[in-house]
Length: 350
Image (cartoon, rainbow, N blue to C red; front, side, top):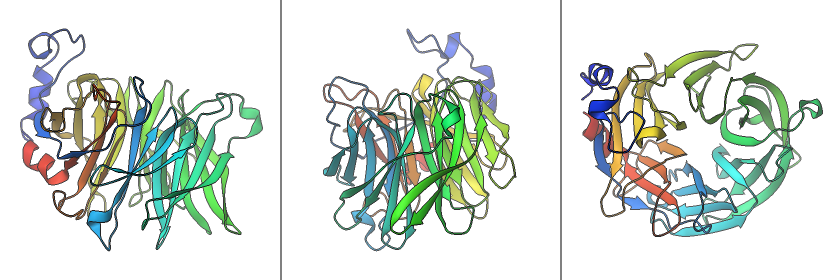
């Protein structure tokens, strides 16, 4: 599938490859089946589950944790068995990410749109041993003169300056991406606005490649952009645009990384418009495979918003890494998150 993908996609536009009653393109993809799933979120009969983050327990990989948002209610913590370890009512949290900033100190951040006019970053500490969350407050970060805005996407990267725990990136619904530094001030974490970059239309998914200092952002109806975080000013370059040559169907939603070596590997994107996931070569931006999570013991996924991927051993069933995808239709239950072994994906597309 790898060698033929670009040629195949270029030839498949509209009619002959379009699924029945689906007006948008429906491109070829390999099928994999989920090998696990989380319990449903608490907000039933609603578009509620949205975005996951993964913490890998290096000492005991099978005890790793998944953090996921119920964007109507708060934040969940799940074990790899899919059971709930904790739930914290925390308002309207949309996207989530985490960083282990020191051994045993896991900082979780989320885009908080509880106040529709004032975007915030909600911060938490995650206890890796118990799976419990501790709220650290919800922090404003934009300059006051910015005016009303809605927090939407969220991701974190390594600190770029002295004394920084991390950098946080909030994707506002109007396409602006605001960068803030997270610092520790006497045990309290503070978010301070640094700079921003603006996209023309609604954007959400983002991920940071710490190795190269690159931010990737999904502009939903347009495609994926990359931003050099080492530059003095943030500017965007096209990475992969919606269309048959890249195998992307709008909306482009969640983004995740499968790093290899110093700068190689894959960027994975949720091609929500045809319920698929696309692997891109980070060096060339060329598509290297597409897959779908098909019906099986745990059901298929559709309308996927957030995704996450972590490499390394996660114990039985996930020895080659863990891919997590939000499922927009988990009927008859509420929405949830599905698990797939990353080695399953690589085997399927190759």
